Length: 367
Image (cartoon, rainbow, N blue to C red; front, top):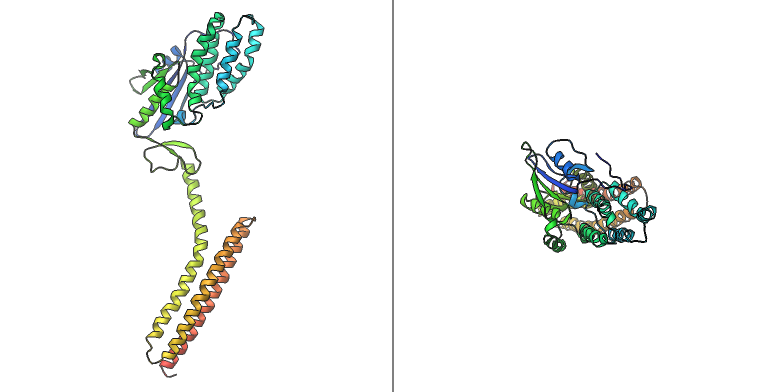
């Protein structure tokens, strides 16, 4: 890979282009982006060796998800500095280079970010500056016009993602500029993937990208675990990777365990209630011992009233423990203790139901 030098004072021949190849096979969806001199890029796309500034293959949608945003107009402020350096009071010497040194540093940082939208803009900026270097004041308007078109999407997509409805206007305007149209080419016959190439603006590339996504029936989703955007075959896909799927499973398990702890109180109450209810049904069948059945019914009603109150208190205590600022292990221990105490009380009440039922059974058999 060739490294671009932002301190260079001489421009190489050939224009800088941005080439995008979207790859779709049965097992893979990806984007390949190449940035470099036009002849070198075409050599590389043809399967030959070519020295370029950027050549990466990434997951589908990466360019759109990580597109450069510039809500504060940092890129456009660099245009002013570059244009200012063209003025006559700066001789073609050290003063002019001193003037643009901050721009060179800014572009170097953007270039080193590795994000292709930033890399392309950085290289194109310095290349255009050098290309118009000796035109003096006449260069100001030309440079301003070219770089403004180049930076325009950075402002348009500072607040919105390229696929958001609010960004459509920017794409429509870009299509009116003839020099910003996408040029299409094809790679070698063995891999007949279509390649879109642009020079002056990245907006047509975005339009091309979105159309391809639509043709392939891919949708833009936001991962519910990490929050990252990703391309998916349908809206049913909510997780972007195996890592997030594993993390989601852990989160779901934790939530389940937390829910079970609370439900355990309810479950134990229901078990005890049914225990009493079953014995009450048996007591009702003993027609000749109505007085004892009435006693059992009163005890059953009393149990229900007290059990509801105990259940409520147990749940409140568990919630209080979970809100405490302490280690998870200590919270777990405290919760288990509350559940155990509630269960012990229920077991004791079941013993009372057994005692009353035993009395009814003994009287029925005349013991």
